[in-house]
Image (cartoon, rainbow, N blue to C red):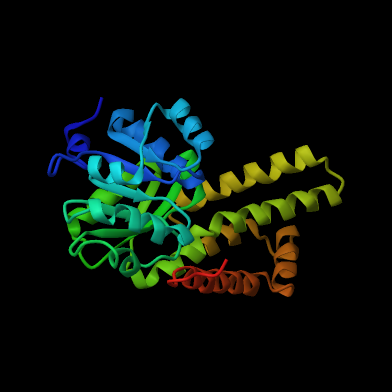
Length: 284
């Protein structure tokens, strides 16, 4: 049962209600699942070109699959969860059915709001979002930015939509590529570190299963401490690092091998690629 506030969210304007999720990939499905949990299947439709994938989503969530033009006619909010290289084709398909009563929310990596606004009728509000894959388990980090025609009410609506899959923050759009480099790509960095530590455990003589259990739970516990303790990461690290102890020896090796600098370089590379993907004709 939805609350009055949730019923108002994406409420009727010109006879349109609800949300259309355009794209049924991993991120599209994560957002779809969260929206269905919060709003119910009757208030959400999905656009997915693969018949096999569309059937999976219908079976899993009980939603209707519709074409792009019909989605724009029926739904006030269009949530674009497609690859950057597919954005222009999607916009061309819906442009004739969209007006300034719609809200377009884009999670396409690197694509600026100006590029989304250009083929649409004048005044259509656009909000750009950088989510991440922990949205799949309701622990996502989404960051929103307003386009030229999006006001406070549009940002608030986008935040409410994305709160279904995790935390939400606002930034100026100029910072979105940096956000992509940290939280958008960030889960992969942590998975990479976990993979490396599990391999290290095997090298030290542990079974892979035991090493995985040790590393994953340690990562979970450390993340909860970071989130809930209100202490700086340096303070938490120092609390584990006794003078002359095992952790101090390990940290010395991490510094000697330039891990801190490597992470900074990785984030810079991700930011640069995000900018490249946002170009009018992104390379593959």
